[in-house]
Image (cartoon, rainbow, N blue to C red; front, side, top):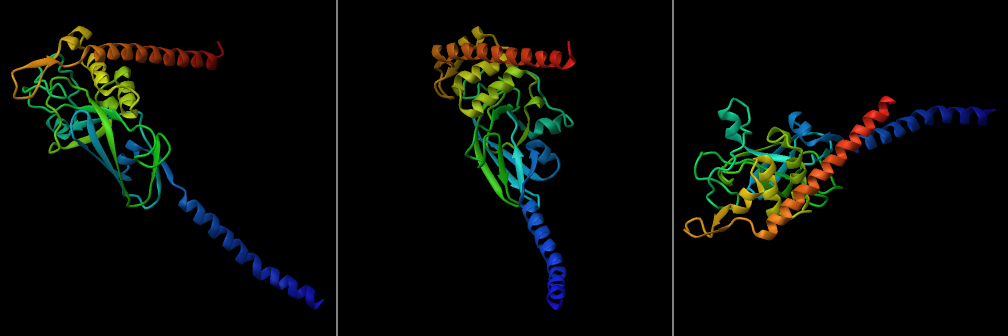
Length: 270
C-alpha cells in the first residue's frame, strides 16, 4: 500500500516536469524554424535591408542584412530591377520607365548615351544555389547576419548612361521597370547564366525599347571611348543567338499562357 502511494506521488511530481520539458523542447525547435517571406515583402516589412551596387550594366553585387530577431527564409524573385534612386526622387516617387528607344550610342558596354543626364536601369536574376547559401530560389539568413552575392544583369534602357559605383541604386521588382514578360524571362535567364549575356542584351533592347533586329545589327560601338573608330556592337553570331533566343522565349510564354488558359477552363467545369 505504501509502495503504491509512493509510486502515485512520484508520478504526480514527474508529470508536470515532463510536460514542461516537452513544451520547452517543442518551443525551442519552433523558435529555430525560419520564417518564410518574399524578398521584397521582407524589405517592405523592415525585416531585411537589401542594397545593390551596380558595377556596370552587366554586373552588380547585392548585400542583404537581416534586421529581424528570428531566422528568415527568403524567397527570391525570378527577376529584379536595379534603379537609380534619383529617378524616384525627381519624379515624386514614380519611376521613369519610358523607353529611350534608339537614341545615339556612345558605344560603351551598356550602349549608353552622352546625353540625357540619366543613368540607366538594369535588370537581372539571382541564379541558382550557391552565393546566398540555400536551395535554388531561396536562402536562409540568421538574425543580424549579412549575405552578399554577385549578380549578372542587362541594361533595360537603351541610350542612358552606364551605371557607376558612385551612383546609388535601389533593388526593385522587375515589374516597376518593365511589364514585358519577355524582358522578365530574359533577366531571369541572364541571372541563371543559362544564356549568352551579350546576346541576351540585344534581345532585351528589342523587347524593352522597341528596337528592331536590324537596328541592333547596325548598332556601332567605339573601340575605345576616346577612339574615333567604330565596330559592330554585336557580332553576327550574337545577333543570330539573340533572335533565336527571342523566338524561344516567345514560344515558352505562349505555352505558359495556353497552360494557364486550360487550367482556368478545366477549373470552371466547361
